[in-house]
Each structure stands twice: as C-alpha cells, then as structure tokens.
Length: 109
Image 1: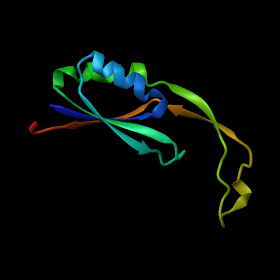
Image 2 (image 1 turned 90 degrees about the vertical axis):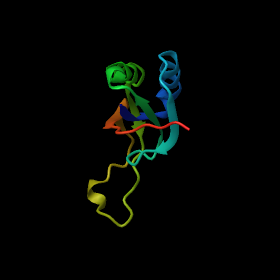
Image 3 (image 1 turned 135 degrees about the vertical axis):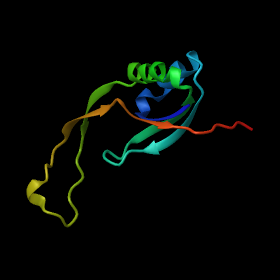
C-alpha cells in the first residue's frame, strides 16, 4: 500500500478531485499555501494499493497542467536593492508535486 501526497495549484484542484472520484480513488483535500508565490494550493492525500499507483499518477499528471503567470515581486525589505526587479515577471506555475510513501499498515474505523 502507498500514500500519495500531491500538492497542486488551486486552479487544478476541482478537476483533479472529480477525476479521482470517477476512477474510485478516495482522497482527503487540505487547503495549503505555497511558500514561493504565497498562493493557494490544495494538498491531496490518497491511499492506494501498489498495483493502482501508476493509474493514480497518470490521473494527477493529466489533470494538473503547467501554465505561465505574471507575478509582481515583493520589494526587498532592508536587503540589497541592486538585484530587485521592480516590474512583473512571468513564472511557470501549476503542475503537481507528488510524494509516494510506503505504508506498513492501514486501518479504517
């Protein structure tokens, strides 16, 4: 058995949630915040059998796409202003960060 922890952008959350239900995966959704862009994320916790792990990873990959987004950088507070870029920059966001962890035991009460 495996525990999959998938951190996805909020824009992909509903689509992924629906796809998981369609393929009979149970998931717990947690509202989380990313450290880099300080934007909302959703973290999914999914327990599954080893033989279904590839299907689960395919579903995550299909429903969590990379996209470009313009962000306004935060000005440095007391730091070196020489390297500060005062205008919005384009960054790649989205996709999913996925951790697959082994589970020794599983209990449901």
